[in-house]
Length: 419
Ligand SMILES: Cc1cc2nc3c(=O)[nH]c(=O)nc-3n(C[C@H](O)[C@H](O)[C@H](O)COP(=O)(O)OP(=O)(O)OC[C@H]3O[C@@H](n4cnc5c(N)ncnc54)[C@H](O)[C@@H]3O)c2cc1C
Image (tube, rainbow, N blue to C red):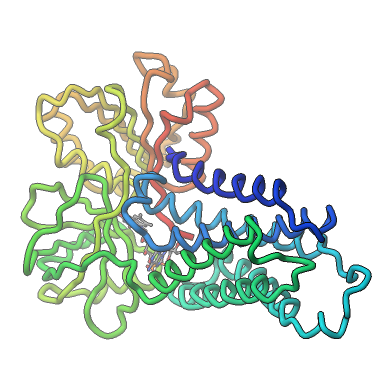
């Protein structure tokens, strides 16, 4: 579930700014200027929120229910910032009020800075949303968006008073936001947003069906994490490039850290084909709030393919006597693809409170809400749903559950992507 606290804070900040701006407009502003400048301010506050979210600070993980959600809100805030900035640009009066000297006004660099900022913002957004660009190429271009932020600050700080009054009540809010935004930007662009790395040695690289299990032995100390959390894995050596996020599939009490990586692109293929025991890995984390312990006693865990990993850690960590009633639906293409199925069966037999439901699409069996409605002993809205898997599966099931009257608060999802 998208924790609403963080979203309320962003919306609250924007409303506060809008109310202050409308309540205390600079005297010389006409209605059109007041409204369109307010939209420009809102666009800037959305950009600031988006930048603050990229700091990955732990406190925000609690407000937004995990880092994956923070990045979703980061993206949505960026899109709304661009839309609002465009409306601001087209709406703001282009003609100067009577009595204003056009030559003196032309000396302000505000207009070119704003135009450049807007152009880069829109181009940057198209790049940011383009999934065809490889992540390793996409990441540095996305960082350039920081430049846009400085252009926009330059735009409003150099704007003539007939358009923007810096020391009006709402102007001061924007200046304060800019100060916080710049600190946040420097913090994340220069990599200070990463949690401390712990060194590990690769103990084993196990080939599974279309996936690889990487087993790591701590060199210094073990990572402290909760079942279902994830970490950034950075392999030392030439050609491994940037860190990649993976859910920790081992249980917290184990003396090794295990990751199960589906072969998807260049990096995960290289892991399968080239990674050797003995190499060094830095692990940063933990991140994520995919926590089944805070929900009700009746739970449905829905894993699609590699989306099993958070549940694998949870099942491995679970002890006998757990009083929850859990149905673990494991959807895979075919039985061969259902990695760790035998181990899951053993855990289900050991624990007694976990009912394992494997579903294979090649046999025509899919995870479906109408099937759950028929087979589950209690009404659908008496369960909490935890889902991790391909986004069409997760969005489809979420929509069907909502149609069946299941409250959004009972639907918890983990996204395996940040952009
Ligand atoms: C919170 C989280 C948990 C995850 N847990 C698992 C897991 O347990 N098992 C598993 O197999 N996969 C997991 N993933 C997905 C995994 O990170 C990607 O599949 C992997 O990074 C792909 O890398 P690639 O270069 O091989 O593939 P590519 O084809 O290059 O990338 C595929 C997609 O993965 C994402 N991606 C690629 N590189 C990065 C990166 N450095 N940082 C962030 N995202 C990136 C991008 O969305 C990209 O579009 C998780 C992702 C997230 C966000």
